[in-house]
Image (cartoon, rainbow, N blue to C red; front, side, top):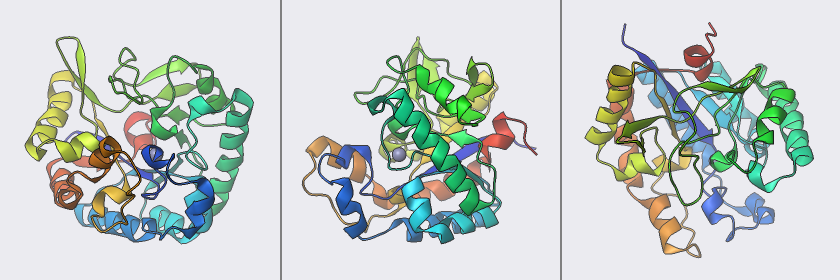
Length: 277
Ligand SMILES: [Zn+2]
């Protein structure tokens, strides 16, 4: 049997990404044309055809408005996990507000999905040196794991000296970082995001396979539903850098994902890293 890797999807719509937050007030979210339902359906059918399972880190805002999306994810045998209620970065919240947000949402998501929610991923990997208290909040809210650290150098997130593979930041909680490769003491992004759209597919494939063979570990990969949607409405007010990162190669993602699903075996985070059956 091939090594299984963890496939993760951050379920948020194109207008909820952090880079566009200064240009789209939260009060406008209700008025934006919704693409997330259609895009999650495309992902679910790609996964079904490839016999792959994954973990869907979902915004509370999306789950509340589109419970049918949550039901379809659960019916497909996928793991349902949490990605913050309204995509507030953990680092922008006080410990009390953060704990209240993730505790309330866990109950909400469990009621909608009928699954126990074990995993949490901070929006924009916003746990780092400035807010290590967040790990205690995640554990105290009843989650078993977090996937909130990307051990790379990046202008908006990342903790380059964090461990590259799962570790316990404190007893009772596992942190599962997004996968990197290490070359000459530098960590190279391997686990998805904009890099997957920017790099040639062969490079992504080689990097993931290298983690499986050289490190002998499963990889953790992530992407967003809007990355498969070249027809999404454009946010013209955003800066050129944000627009480049958001829109580059959107038309190529679906084909690349098909190849990724074919070239590796994929499963849920709780099965790969927590030994769930
Ligand atoms: Zn997000």
